[in-house]
Image (tube, rainbow over all chains, first blue to last red; front, side, top):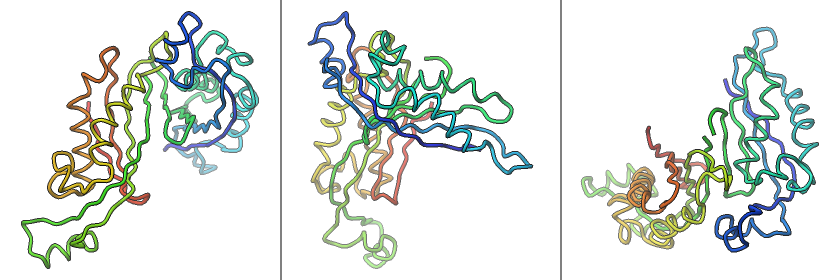
Length: 138
Length: 142
């Protein structure tokens, strides 16, 4: 069974590679490359996979998942300029893809099988654009 | 491997009517969708693609290229059109959302390779919302 918890955070970022020119960055990232940065209301959905515990009837305690998301993600990302304040985005371009991978890395260790396994991280930076990462090779 | 989904919108009109059936059978089968004057929807189209993340750009695909492809082949062809009369090559002669979703997938696939001259992501799924309650998935099987 899959269970999903949703969380939101607001953060600013800029998608550009320092080694490239403004023109090249604009061609790759569009308006996301504006050097002064911009913000999004990011929506994060974290999905766990597991079987309900016969004693509790739950795959995982969602209150606990909420607390893990607060500690690992919200407290770290919310109201921050990612490129400046949140490693590894001082070195890695904070595209939604790379953000989803970093969120996966931060969460993965919290869910050792057999109880529940981290199944998917889904991150939307706008209503018409989102990415999903299910672990494994990049 | 990352999957990316991009959402697009277009409005179009259609009428569901099969020439193989009588007028009465059409009315019974398609109900209000058989109204001879047609009707329209504000369609929502989700295009999902996947691939490895490019190490230098941090992106799975060139989004501007995807936008151009969808705009050229789908949105400009279907937007504010009568689907069966003006876009039968995509929507089919009976423009149900099943036929429309399959036609959109086929049209995207036909022009996919040339649209991504560098890194070519994989087209995974076309999801068409005819209304918020009626959803049609056309999966591209591996």
